[in-house]
Structures are given as structure tokens and as C-alpha cells.
Image (cartoon, rainbow, N blue to C red):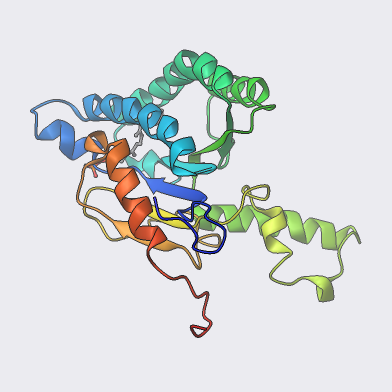
Length: 243
Ligand code: FPP
């Protein structure tokens, strides 16, 4: 991992966001149903979370289910929902004991009550952890998030808590689901598609992007390390000229 030449500290990405794509194709290539690929994908999450501290990644945000994913077959949607429940039950202890703080972003309205209860419980049980902040985007869409944030902001204006003339670039992020998180430094999408598919639209305005061919169930900690190294060797200018 590259070090900052001035202070010798790691200068890889502090916040990595991942669009975990390619589970379906991975399963199809093996002649198996799509859910087989999702299960294999879920197993990869742990390896990636465990690699974060060593790579200097403090925040990891993963796209587990989008607002558009409801359009998949009923079998696949139900299978994914039950996978999320089982995953939370299985991993809660590991996250709690290993310093991982878990948060969920997205709209909970369409999720079933049992899943919401498990999500709340996982958030509560890991609330004091600070080694890695894992954020799982579930029923998440960037446009939906901005619309929900705007609704809350408009309500504050209507109630006289916020003046319209005070609304600026700093205001909206305070209403987003990600309000306690820094913006992502690096967004990775697996499986060869070069799209951001409604993920962290506002937050990734200045992020670096890596679109890689690996299908998510084949993604490894060493591939993450390679991407972090290549991030550290690039210069981010945020629209400014080089000095
Ligand atoms: C995209 O692959 C993946 C998803 C829609 C689901 C992501 C879920 C997981 C990786 C598993 C569970 C995660 C957690 C946090 C337990 P795709 O189905 O679109 O693949 P394809 O493009 O090859 O069809």
C-alpha cells in the first residue's frame, strides 16, 4: 500500500463502495440457479470486510439490493430476502466481536418486519464498534434517497426549522441516509459493466471509479489490495489544477 511521502501514513482509500455485480452470471456459468451465485457472493463479503483494517479502509459500503431489484422474479427476490435474514443471523456475532459497526441505508418501507427487526438488532449490537464501518445498501436507490432527503428538508422548511436561503451544498447531505459517513473515495463495480446504477449518486461526485471484469463471487482480498494500491498512485484534484 503506498504511503504518504510527507507523513508516511497509508494513502489508500478510506471509504470504498462496491457494486457487487455478477452473481447471476457466475451461477449460470456453473449451470446452477441464480441464488447459488448470491450465496457465493454473500460469502465473499466477509473476506472483504476482514481485509479492510489492513488496507486502511475505515468505511466499506456495499450495494446488496437496489430499488430496481424488485423487478426480478418473485423466486429470486424472496431468495435474496431470506439470504439477508440468514446472513445477519449468522454474522452478527462475528461483526460484533471484530470491531465492525454495521449500518443499513435505503428505504425500509418495502422490507418485511422480521428483516427490519434483524437489521435494527445488528445495528444496535455493533453500535459501539469503530474498527470498520460497514454500510449495507438494501432497497437503496440514489434518486430515491435524494427524493426522501428532499422531502425531509422541505418539511423542515415548512415547519420553520430551516430557511430556504440557507440551503446549500452542505445542507442536503445532512438529510441523506449516509449523513454520518464520509463520501466514498473509490467505487468499485465488478462483472465488467461500466454503470453506476443509481448507487451513491450525490456522494460519489468526486470518487474514483474502478470497473473490473471479475464476477463478484470471484472477488478476493488481494484484488481489493491491488485496486487500493492503484488508487494510492493516482492524484485526485477535485476540479483544481495540479500544484
Ligand atoms: C448483483 O448480481 C447482485 C445482487 C443484486 C445481490 C447482491 C447480493 C449479494 C452479493 C449477496 C448478499 C449480500 C449480503 C450483504 C449478505 P446479479 O444478480 O445482477 O448478477 P448478474 O448481473 O450476473 O445477473
